[in-house]
Length: 225
Image (cartoon, rainbow, N blue to C red; front, side, top):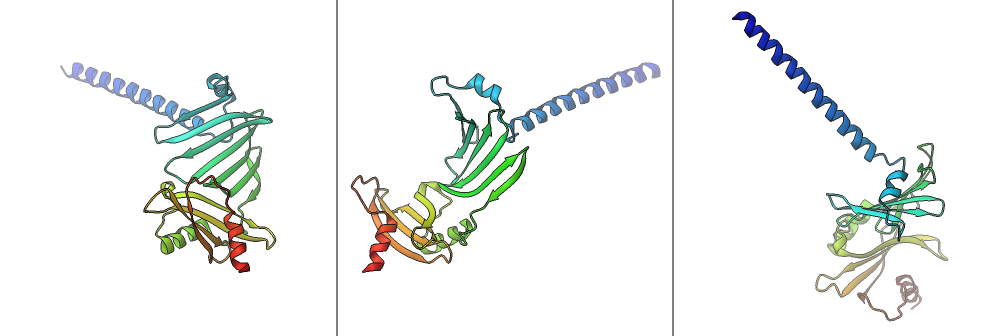
């Protein structure tokens, strides 16, 4: 009787070990697949050629979390664009013909906030656009305090860009946000990118096709008066 019990115990132990090993193998394979799919240093050329739309020569799909990924062939390699409807951030990666990462651009709406250049998976050049002393977070706080608008919410923003003003070589932010009374109206604001001062404010009809001066030109006219 004791021998039978020991035999059953040994058999159960062996079964437990086999199950544990199987679970470990499955987990390891799943982890490997995850790491492989998250490897952004290399473009999956084989997968792209297999899944691309032959008419447009691109491959696009949406992940479960709403992330939209678009991949397409460029003149000297491949481009991957990653965006999400609920986020103001988007990423553009450029790869060479072999699928090696050569450049990564991070944007906030249409604003370039970081440009990384790569060689052999290592960063060889970085541009963080430091001429804008007012950071994105500074801008977020400023806009929220002055206009009660959240620039982290794309539904509230019609346009947000930044550039260097010609002639004076000064960095500015240009913000256009929807009026709370109607999305047919947008409020336009020009903000100094160095100290955060509000340089100019105006209001426009959203989607108007009539020829209008740029916010910058309106600003110039206003200071000449």
